Length: 428
Image (tube, rainbow, N blue to C red):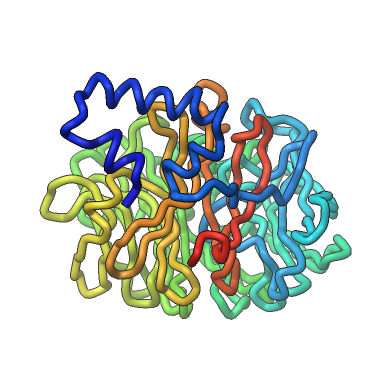
């Protein structure tokens, strides 16, 4: 039970006007003047468990929630470093890629830089599954084309992959790519500036979509085209719309991938379907077409947890959807808003966050699986008037490989930095 939320702010015996004033005081003056009291009211403890991994004056972040920044031995955390934090990247803006040592003073060690990046997902910086101790990948732009680069911990370039990477199978041999230039136009904040969309005037090109890349031979093939998706059970809203794909994620065992098929008439108006297929594009299946579909994570190879409207209607919630079509709600009574969900390595917990509430606060939590018991870990300030749209700083919480720590990005101190939580400090 959250003492502050359940006994004070929401207690029906306390008049609404008093509850509202109490909540506003706690979330504004109380939070700033009495930080220990604020934490005790929300979490039943006074200690701050959110510890900085990086420090200013430059800005640091990792990126999305579906990758871990820790290497195999937990001695390095991958990171980006930027010199600004108040606008989207322009064509020639570069970001440094490198690492920090979590047991050090937070000094960023830059190894390279690139101009293929955004605030939401960075450069797709990630450890190479083939050698997650010493090798990492990031995207880059060279001669007007987006590529991926493999480096070692000295920064030495090991190889260049002809297409930018979005996701990689667990075996480290197969990756998947998409059109980041198309994303820059239709999903600002997720694409890269400075490239060329060869299909810019084609609403649903047959020569674009999801590319499978053999990382050993650097050969690629188109496995799912946007034309194929647009012609699959077309909806009336697809008339005149432009189609693209986004958010590719491999299943835990690498047997399938999931992705979004999105169609839009403007960058702010779109609809989405959730698809899965085998890594070669076969067995393509629309897993969900309910109108509202957002963040997701694979439970294994046979089921996905996703924030969405149920197929039969109702309100959006986390849904466990099996490949055979079974839909089971998860944590519907404890989570009322969308968040970036991910399973712990042992599948005992679901890590999740929220967008800013009315006070500009984002909440970090874990949910027990499959019961859905909620444990709030932190509340961090991210006012929309400073960071929203393309430059927002979602927490994007990520698990360490052993499930003992959590890493997140935050702007609550006024700069964009990386933080970590040791779950032993919160009794988990």
